[in-house]
Structure formats: structure tokens, C-alpha cells
Image (cartoon, rainbow, N blue to C red; front, top):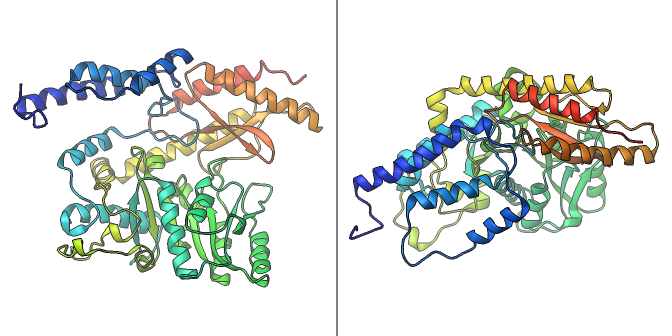
Length: 479
């Protein structure tokens, strides 16, 4: 028995680490064989959830037994780390990032003020500068901060836009986005004090992109009505369909109307590392701010988001603050304090989970993996387009393919029957547990999605998914 049980000695730490590492390696090695959805029955899930609601005991337990319980909890979930997760926008999680995070949490350095851990702050700043300048194409002087995810990044961008364009008077402040924008856009605007009635939904074109002409007309009409347009939000890879808005035209509109131009590139941004992605995402370099989610297309663990901005002073002006208890804190050269760029003061060093994989594997490894996802999505599109029972409305801009059951004719009744058949189709596909897809609604139609993002998803799993989808589609009837 250790005198101080919260301070295990070297032998105990080594043994504890070995037990955890062995389990993690074993799970990771077997990801390809694991079911894509929870194998537990509804009652078993309910019982397991209830067991985890119990409070901690007064006396300590056995680590091996506790890890076994954690394995049960990990099994009671979508297998988001595996190659069959094609639903939503997967976050697969690099093993090297997990190792970085273990080291990071053990050293436990403070990330809010650069002077507390200046070298780690510089490490984090290097990751942000790479994202802002090398990935997004923003100029020298750009920067930003790492966040817990895209929602917090979008919130900070909205606050910066509000402060920069509206000042202290929020009356009449108006935001413009589309029906396909991530729900965090409207939520961020409301949290930033903008009335829900002042969040405009700009019509989209038949190919599901924001209509720049409609956006311009809405901005002019609102100005004429005495309102104050201040923020235009475009999407570089919508969650629903992976579609990229016409970024150059919208950037021109934002400049003409003197509104802040924010791009939600949480999903699509890192595809700019590829030649095809750089072409399809032209215009990102003209943004005032950009949301990125490294836990999506940079394959980092969940909880890794980023906001990059053209003018770092605008971000600082909107979020700066201090207190007398911070009077002993110095500066760290040219490294900004992230605690003065966003709403959080205390947070961990978030950059290490990205810095280590990028330096260990090299940027080319990420570029090649993203190119592979674009290839796989095109293969999915081409294959499903040849299935008579399905309609595939558009070619993918990025790595999301949408499809649904084809109606028997052009009537509304036929469309409703096809939508119901599509719901059953999704259930049957996911019932195989080899892959998991998700659905959305596009212009009133129930639509299935295949989103290829996981770094562990390769041609073999996509071929299996297509075989399942095709076989199940041929079983349906809309009669």
C-alpha cells in the first residue's frame, strides 16, 4: 500500500501504463473487425448506462477490472474510430495523436497564457500559423487559436465580427447564411446577442450552394429597412451534402457591403492540402475568419477545433480581458496569449496532439490520405449512379455522397413512398453492422449520406459498403 495513493511509484506507474497501453493497442489492432454500431441489445445498453450512473466508492478498486468496465462502455457506442463509420462526419483519431495527448496530459502544462509554458505555446502557435497561412492561404500576420471544436470556433468568430462591425450597439445586427449551414452558426449568433429574427436564411441554387445574387438582394433590402448587416457565413463543405458555397463571389459581396466574411470549413478546410481540394476551395484565402476542425479531416481526436483569422488584432479586441491576479504574468516574445483570443482562459496545451503527428508523419501523409478519400467518394458516386433503384443527385465536391430511393414517377405520393423506402433502406444497411450511414433532408426529400473521412477507411471497406447498399437497394419496392 502506497503512503500517498495519488502518487504511484515508478513500478506502479509502469504497470498501470502497460495495462492501459495493451488494451488500447489490442482495440486499435482489431478495429477493422469490430461492428460499426453497438452490438448490445436495448436492454443491455440501458442496464450498462444505469451501472455507470453510480457514484464513486470510498475505497479504491482494481485497475484491470475498471478497464474491463471501460471496454464495455466503449463497445456501447458507434465505432467512430473504425473504417466502417461513414455517418455524419467521422473523426477517426490518430494513434500518434493519442500518444501525444497522453504525454500532454501527464506533463499537464497550462495553455491559456504563453509565459507559463513558452515553448509549448510556441509549438501551438506554429500549428495555428500553419493552418492559417499554409492551409487556408491567409497572409502574414494572420493567426488564431485552437478550440474544443468547430462550434466554439464559430462562436468566437461571431463575437469578433460583432465587435468589429457593430461595436457595443447590437441593435439591427443581421447575419446571413443558408439552410445547409451547420446549426452552430445560428446558435453562435444567438449566443452573441443577435436576435433570432435577424439571422437570415439565404436561398440556395439548385446545386445546393448559397445564391450570391439572393444574398446581395437580402443585404440591400435589410440596409434599406434600417438594419445593420454585419456577418456573411459561407460553408466550405456542408455537413448535409459536402457542398462548397461559391466562395469567391461571396467574398466579393462581403467586401462590397463591408460585412465580415466567415467561412465554416470545419469539414472541408484541410482538403486544401490536395490539388483538387485547393481548386474547389478557392476563395478561402479571402475570408476574415475560418472555422476548421482538425478532428475531422486532419484525423485528430475529438475536442480539436481551430479558428483562424486574417487580422489577429480584431480577435484580440473582442476577447481581451484581465484581472489583478494575473499581474505577475509576463509575455513570451511574439507568441500571443490564447486566453486573450477566445472565451477560455484555462485550457490544456491543445497543439501537441496535432504537432506530434504532423512532425512524425509529415504533411504529405495527410495529403495522400485526403486524396484517397476524394478518390473513394468519386468511386461511391460512380457506382451508386449505376444502380437503377437509386437516384444520386450530384457529384461530390469533397468526400460526401448523397443518394436515395428513386421515386416511381414525378408525383408527390411517389416521392413520399420513396422517402419511406429510403428510411427502411438505411435501417437495413446499418443492420449489417459492417458500416454505418446517416441521413438528412435535402429540399424536403429524405436522403442518405456516405461520408468518407476516416483515415482507416480504404477501398476494401468501401467496396463492402457498396455491395451492401446495392444489394439492399435492389430489395426495396415503392409500390
